[in-house]
Length: 498
Ligand code: BES
Ligand code: MN
Ligand code: ZN
Image 1: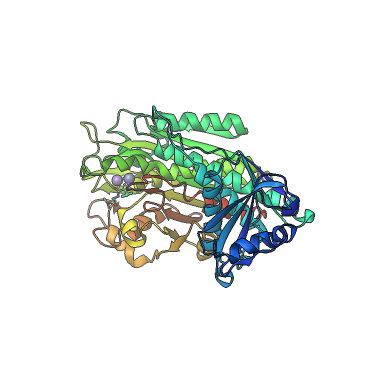
Image 2: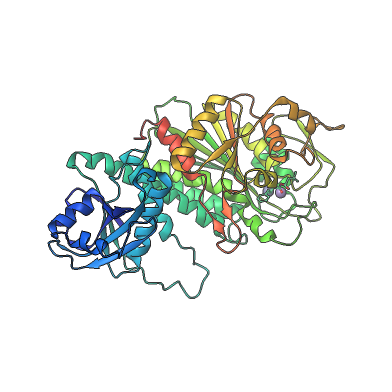
């Protein structure tokens, strides 16, 4: 789909479809009133006959409205004007796209982005609209021999602003929304790919291709490199698999030389069987999503590179399978991590922390300003927060607040969880510096506590996205979260968030 920003009164707009809003009790928004005036009260007349009230989620399609230059006028119900907030705005855009797609219109001009939304700027409204449109258009059907043939004729979509002076700002916001969508669809594609195709080597090749496309620095560490570095915790997870593990590093250098980078670390377990601590069979296929952390940092990097943000960003992806087998790690094995700390592996299914700890230690060599890891780390986080919020942990409150703000702005929310020392003792082991599990209670927290032992040298946050990175059930699939949160955090840091 082609997107653009326009500034032209709706009655002078040519094309297949003009979309305007109506609040409840048939109150016309300003663009709707302008059309109505050009049409000599034709629209108000139709509403007066009771064909539409302006209820949220409703729509009414009119053809050949007199006095206008477009083929169709689509009225979108917005609900109560006083209650028109973020959620209602998003619903209006979704309703508009759905209704347009049910017509034969190949282009449409949407006049909903100038509607005031509490605490939200014009740039926010444009960004969100672009993201909603792209999200609605997402399909993953490369393995279907018959493609979805629902008619979707819409090719060109314009968001309309009141004043020409708003064009540059709106265009920047549109570019941001589209770049975030691009990062999200990469993350969704990677997550949705089956585990026989999306293995560590596949992710490494994709990273190399992206490095070529955007002129990024790329480094892939192989098993032998990890051995030299002493990454025995990561290697312990990989040793049961026939797929070679990869540690993938990609850097976007948009900031000043010498400026400390932000480092994003993403859990890349391309399939998590649990290892010798084997998972039960039902829904085990969903463990193909155990690389969604990796997918989200790759997606975020793509967004940042597309926007050429003036920041230095490095991503690190430890990628491996977690398989049982004759060579697999046993419960009770003790390994020495790259940091020198020893770990008793009591449960081979708590493998995410084992690969992340070595990747986090590796992050030290980039002299980072901030490190954020993203992982489908614990079922306990899903129990705590469901699929609404990602679990957020940080060793600096200011960083946690910046990330919470970014999540709220992006409508990709996180919730701040505790990292108090009181939880640390649950990781005690009689034989090594720590065990890799903390017992039955507070599982998302003890997992974060484990990681915190490897992040003492920098500002660090951890996002547990086990409940948010993908959906189960009928509309199963990767969501692309938390790309919007991370992208907003980085745009804010770059001074590009209007
Ligand atoms: N990848 C899983 C976590 C997970 C569970 C993600 C459900 C998405 C949905 C992780 O590797 C895991 O198995 N964690 C264990 C940890 C436990 C053994 C301490 C868990 O959550 O059960
Ligand atoms: Mn596991
Ligand atoms: Zn896992």
